[in-house]
Amino acid sequence: MIRFGFIFLAIILFGFPSETKAVDLSGKRVEIIVPAGAGGGLTRNARAMAKNFSKHIPGNPTVVVKNIVGGGGQKGINFVYNKGKKDGTQILFGPLNFVGLNIGLPGIKYKAKDFHVIGMCCGTPFTTIVRKDIKGGIDSREDIVNKSGFVTGGRIPGGNLGLFSRMPFAMLGIKNRFVVGYKNQPKLKAAMLQNEIQALTTGNPGYFAFYVNDTLKKGDGIALFTHPTLDQKTGEPRPVTHMTGVPTFLDYYAKVKGGKPSGDAWEAYKWKATYDQWTMSMYLPPGTPKNVVGAMRKAWKDNWSDPATQALYKKGNKTLPILLQGADADAILNNFKSMPEGAKKYFAVETGIAKKNRKKKKK
Figure 1 (cartoon, rainbow, N blue to C red):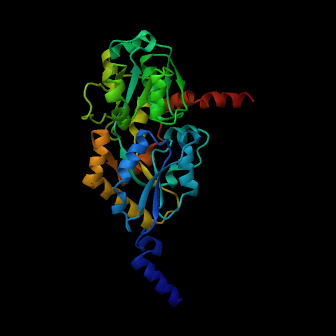
Figure 2 (figure 1 turned 180 degrees about the horizontal axis):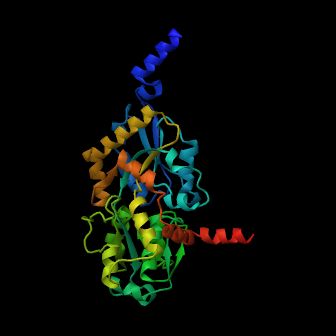
Figure 3 (figure 1 turned 180 degrees about the vertical axis):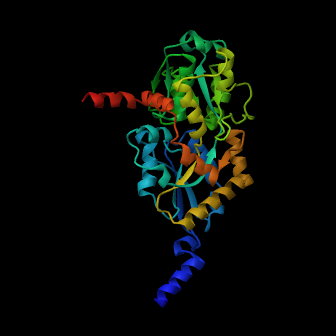
């Protein structure tokens, strides 16, 4: 009884050993797992983040970026969740499939709430681009409202690169066919150059790496509009200060249609722009000890405060990322399932879930 009392007192004073033990990853190899192809914007940003990450991690381990592709982006996420090492040496870098978790997309073998979020990052806008010769050609971005029947490309069902084209086109009443399966932005660009697709959306790093000084500068394409993150508290778009000459979708819509959009696609758009643009989020697998989680959260914060990391990121993105940690990051994870019914309906149709459910009911 006395022995138990001493143990209990020690726990009160010093905490459980796993919570208080100092983290030291000396001689270890930390893998930053990216669930997307090696040439795309997500991997580019992962490499920029990883360059100086080691010096902020206790023990200064080797840090490498590793791509795990497949399953519509879910293979890498499933791996970290179900098989990832719990000592801080395997970290997910990328977005969870919040759309899929809301509507029951197959292939998802994880629960968002069980991950340990290190920090959420990005919040920079996506940009929709079309070929200038699309369906007979356009002279200005406003002309796209008179076109239909073209092909829009995307990476995965429920992914940003496809939906931030499809949702605006739906709100504008523009009919188009959607094709997914392109592993990364270079694959999407190649498909556009070959006229396999005529419309796509790119993330912020892809916009500057693949299009600004090539497709757009040559006049082969037109950037239609950007999609900034919506502030979770106010619902207002976060200001875009590093891009000029390209309107936000809401400004574009007001110009060509007047007022604000409405309907299921609009509900889906608002939800996605609020919760699903934190593409550079980092997660540790379930069961990771609290001391490791704490050490990695501090390393993440210190790394993004490092001028060298900021310079690398800004070189490819022309701006600094928006960072969420603590209560702000928890608010995203705790509230992303508050998806409006109209948004669920839109995403169910868009991803094919609605069609599959109808077939099940018939059986």
